[in-house]
Length: 476
Figure 1 (cartoon, rainbow, N blue to C red):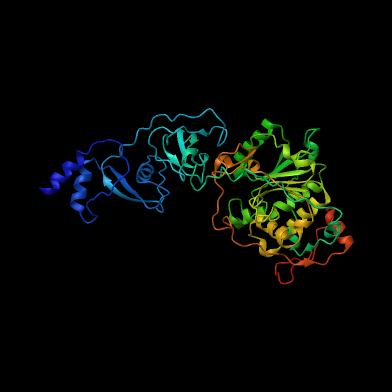
Figure 2: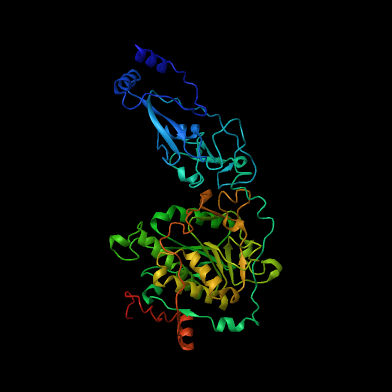
């Protein structure tokens, strides 16, 4: 009798939208007879009642997303759910208004105007405007484009970011443009700059990889932007190329074949080996490109997009007109404790001038990435190791790019982008290595004669001493 009354009460529950879900006392899994009866009475349908396990989510966010009819997003690290009989009555979300101000998160993303209660918070600030997930709040880690199959357009609730962990509106008020090298005082620093021991086979580009050619650029181009892409990144490359045309930048992509590192399945596109080999080869690709170019080279990861013309890459545009050999994105560029003389960079956007100092630094980085222990190390951290710990800070003039030149969400949501990273997706990582398998290692210095050095820097010779203990060192 008690079970019948309880069943009738459950079936009579109103279908109003769920607000913050409170602790619900439900029959346990051992009450099989009662659960079967309830499920049968509701036509066999079930839905989930969820509780949040962390401040990153709310009860209502978990319940809403874990009951999505298509592609439910229900991370067990955030939500604890229990299936109960009955159909889930989805919230009806009115149309979210969107500001007409600056484009904050990409070509179609705008700033949401706060409108009543919302489950969006600093961890889930994107709200779907059109598509199957309309009204749903979404993760920072994928931006709105990560849900392209279920959300066609989204906006950003900046009000949940202001004052939270990601509010950096006061952090960019000052900008240090970077240290300048005195060419007279530091002349000996460059002539005495070290070369490094490498695995010589790794100082060769994959067969069939066509280098970008600056002769393909506009006659008045002052630099060329290059990128590497594989078939899986073709859509992002196309997106980047469209943005290049929009702002008038000469961009030249180079296709990396799916079997660039051999036909073995372990080296195919999509494998870890393919990814690590491509990352390690990146500085060599840039160096080879600039050696055969009459223009400075800007490197862009293929998931970057221009939003404005990048004037800082033009000659004479840097503060006070002082030219730079290298322009890098430096997370520590404005840290007062380092006075701008410490590099903790990101390699998604980089400018290398076709000066001797810029090209020498680029070659040193290529060698360091061809050192065996750095096979699976973060390329930007290897560059930082050379600059900070092996004297390269004093061998070139550096410019620290402002945040707008590699705007990343959510930290830079308030900054109009010149170059944007992956349409609002947050950079991956969190362990300090960004998903890499090794920490950067300093390669040993190599004994190189002047003639050998000149041959290497001209691109006519790649041969260097191999690391003695490296069993994989080839004979050539």
